Every structure is written in C-alpha cells, then in structure tokens.
Amino acid sequence: MSTIRRQSIISSVIVYFGFALGLLNTYLYTRQGGFTKAEYGLTNTFIAFASIMFSVASIGMPAYIGKFFPYYRSNLEPKQRDILSWALLLPCAGFLLVSVLGLLFKDVLVNRIFNNSPQLLEYYYWTFPFGFGYLLFMVMEAYAWQQRRAVLSNFLKEVVFRFMVTVLIVLTTLGVIRNFEGFIGIYAFLYLVLFLFLLLKLRQDGQLHLSLKISKVTRRFKRKIVTLVSFVWGGSLVYNVANVFDGIVIAAVVPDGMAQAGIFYLAQNISSLMQAPQRAVVSAAMGPLSEAWKRKDYGKINHIYHRSSINQLIFASAMFCLIWINFEDAISTFRIQGDFIAAKWVFFFIGLYRIIDMGTGLNAQIIGTSNFWRFEFISGLLLLGLSLPLNWALTRQLGIIGPAVSNLIAFTVYNLVRYIFLWRKFRMQPFTSKSLYTLLLTAGCYFVCVLLFEHYRGFVWIMIRSAVFCLLFATGMLMLKLSPDVQPVLATLKKRLGIGN
Image 1 (cartoon, rainbow, N blue to C red):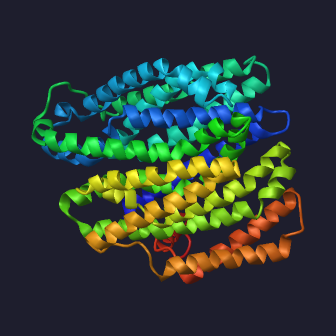
Image 2 (spheres, one colour):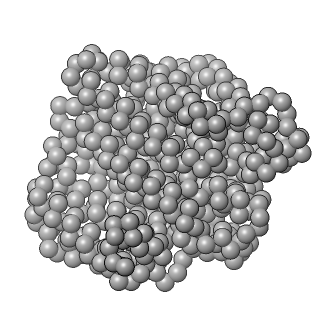
Image 3 (cartoon, rainbow, N blue to C red):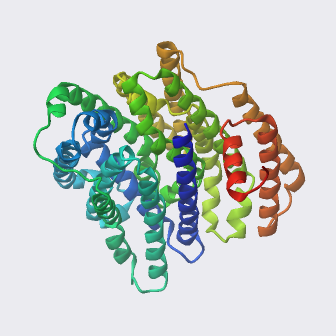
C-alpha cells in the first residue's frame, strides 16, 4: 500500500495544483469583463463532446491495457509487446468512423437538437481535433499507469493542460489572440500536444514499445480480449454518456442553452475540487489492482477498497463543506458575473453525488480489473437507463438544477448496485464506523462555522472561515484517527525534517 500511498500523495499534490490553475482559469473566464457565459459554456461542451468521442472510438482499449498488460509484461520481452500498437491503431480507426458520422449528421445535431446553442454551430468542426487529441492521450495515459508513470500523466493532464489554457486566456485578454475564434483554433489542439509529449517522454525513458507482429499473448488471449473490450467498451460508452449528458441536455433544452450550460459547468468545475484524491488514487491503484487480481490476492484488493473509501470520503466531505460555506461570498468578493450565483444549488446536488461516489471507494476499478467486468457493462446500462430520461425530464421542469438532481439519484442507485455486487460476490464492503464519524465531524465543523461567521463577508472572512473549518476538521480527524494513512505520512515527514527521534 506504501507505493499507492506515495504515488497518490504526489499525484494529489499535482492534481490540487492543477485545480488551483483550473480555479484561476474559471475566474478569468467568468469575471466581469471576461469571456461571455456562452463562450465559457462552449469550452466545457468541447470536453463533453470529446468524452463521448473517446467512449465510442476507444473500443475499450484503456481497459484492455489495464487488464492484460501484466500478462504481456510477464510473458514477453519489451520489444515483443504489441499491446500498445493495437491500443492506438484501433481507436484511430474508431475515430475515423466517429468523424464520418459526425459530419454526416451535423445538420441533425446542431441545427435541430442544439438550435438553442448557435455557438456550437459556429465552432462545430473544431470539436474533432480536440476529441482526437483527447482520445489518444487517454489511451496513452492508461499505458503510462501500467508503466508506473501515473505522476507524469497526471502532471500533463491536470497541470500542463490547464496552464496552456491559462496562457491562451491571458493572450486573448491582452489582444495578442485577437478573438474567440483564434482562441478556439489553438484550444482544439492542446490534447494532441500533450499526447505527443507523453509519447516522446516514454520513448526517451525506454518504456515505449510498438510492434505490429501479433504476439503469443495476443493469440492466446484473443477471445478473452475481444469479450472484454466488447463489454467494457459498451459499459464505458454508457457511463460516459450518462456522465456528460447533463451539460449537453441543458444546451439542447434550456433557452439560451450555451450560456445556461456555462452556469452549470461552473458548479460542476468547482465540485471537481472534491475529486482530486479520487483521480490520484485511481491512477496509482490500477496497476496494483490488476496484479492483485492476477495473483488472486483478495486481501490486498479489500485493503485498497477500504483505504480508498475512507480517504476519499474525508477529502470529499470536507471540501464540499468548505466550498458551500464560502460560495456566495466568493461570487461577490471576486467579482464573478452576477448570473453565476445560480450555480450554488447546482453545486449542492452535484457535491452530494461526489461524496457518495467517492465514499464508495474504487468499486468501478475493482470490478473493471476483475473477471467480472461484464457486470460493469450491466450496471452501466442501468445508469444510462436512469440518467438519460431523468436528465431530460428534470431539466425541462427545473432548468439547470434538473441534471444535478438527476445525477444524484442515478449515481446513488448505480453505486448502491456495485456495492451490493462486491459484498455478495466477495464479502467486500468499504465502510466502517469511521465512515460515520467522518460525516458527523464534517457536519459539526460546518455548523460551528455557520454560527460564528454567517453574517461576515469579504476576502478576509473567507480566509478566516476556511481556516477555522480546516483547523477544526484536521484536529477532529487526527483525534479520531479516521485515516490509517495519516500517521505513516506524518512519521515520514518528521523523519525527513529531522523532527523527534
């Protein structure tokens, strides 16, 4: 677990630094005198479209790498491994099909479905290079995880990408990039730049191996590979569609759709602060989980399940309250465009969903790397069946709050089903009494801060309110010994700093 802990901590620092850049970008997008709400919504819609393109075109290759790479590593010399070649070639063919379909059905998609969002029609073609770069980078990221290069891939995705966006925003604000069209023209190629950098870095380090000769491992496992990618491909497709459908349905259904989508995406992007540990833990744990299933080491899998649950729950619940108690104050203090205050209750429901999703641990990754990955496809169908009609119906009734409420319902059911499956199949479940203590501690710290600082406004009071909450929460977490990873980390820090014996 120490390897996962070390990589998770490093990755968490990287992810949080990236999120700090993301918050800066959000501020630059949404501040008074910055980009319009529709322009901000469009850049986020690019990511939603790219996620769907990736889901369709990837043909399950990241799961193929995650599940079978340990077998290639155990049975083949590096130069004989053909896994990366197929993992890149097949998605390229898949993306060609996606592009053809996207061009053929452009009029249906943009002129009919998204007639509330004329900005999408204007910049529609730029979604394709953005989606292609995103596809290649995500496949290469899965390969980097198996090479124990999660820190590098996280740094590129979480920090470098956002830094490049920061540069683009600043250059546009200063007039160096003359208009939004020029901004989008460069923005569309950012993921291609990241993919090429990761490719060259792995090659430089001797970890990039491409071979078009079909290896004995591929021949031996070809039926299992085809079965796996078929189910996981379908499961990934339905999960990602359900995950990004909220912003898309707002753009399609709500009047002035792209501007309203911008408000929704503000809440969604702020709530992503709660996910930093999840992203770090997933990237660090995928390799060890694959190896543990290969060795049938159920104890290690259960160990990872428990640790991921409590650590993520601590971060998610604390971050949710920290954002919630400062939301309105931050909008006015930092001179964000006034219309964005509507994102507050959107964040509330998205935040509750994030707490549930992170609190249930790495259930998706545990199932996905096991021999029961078919269940991931079945549960994904359940998620899609709940999410799409709920999103559509509640968006028409509640506006931009509708998708947030819909996702809270759908993803709660989705995680409950996966929780029950792992419990019945392996007698694994992630919760302990410390899970309850974490929620009670969070609620207690929240009410103390509300009682003390509810009527105070301004930057200084945001800092004081946040500092008091963090102090109370950290003290309670240490006294209750909620996380088993805190003491080893503190001991390591003391040792390196020369504190104590």
